[in-house]
Length: 250
Ligand code: 13P
Image (tube, rainbow, N blue to C red):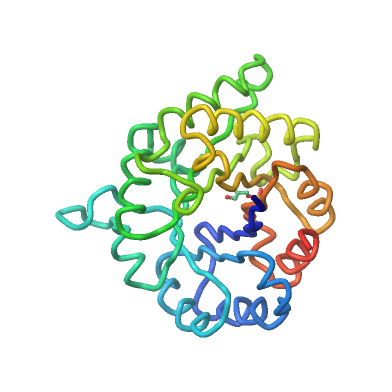
């Protein structure tokens, strides 16, 4: 079975309405062939989601959310539900990014509930995992990532509705990337774990790498057999960089 690569941009807390021009430029620059052979996704801040969805309408570009609440609706001031994201035009949602785990105290249990809400609303969940530098230096990278997956995978996850993003925390926004060997080893280990948990239906889920992916290193990173694309932060904000990364996957 062949897995379709997913190249996803996470804009984080960046972007104003004027930046829609950059998003439009991405759509214009990515070729029909690239759109056919890859899934391409931009997750902008929620304030821009509906606008970007309307720009992407009638194109192959996907848009997604960066987080969602675990409930469908209710008294949760400031929160956004998966159903709202879907209603705004999202088809994916990033869940459990390390910045949310660290800055908003999200545990594996909350990540799991959020991912389940995403699936229930018909979104594809991109569940993020990754070790800190201390955990890597202590030799605990695999153990950490495995337990994050075991505890945060949503019920009912399969290769159609769930994507895993391996993002070593120390490689995010630092310019440092894991070596290809480290990435391939971790992705292979994640694939084995998915097989153990859910057989072929889960093990064929896409496993993305995230952490300082740039046009210059994309090709090498994406050449790993268990690397099914990337989750891109800083370099997804500019059409030139993001399209360079898409080219690296082609
Ligand atoms: P950078 O690409 O800026 O390192 O961010 C990675 C990331 O956190 C994507 O979710």
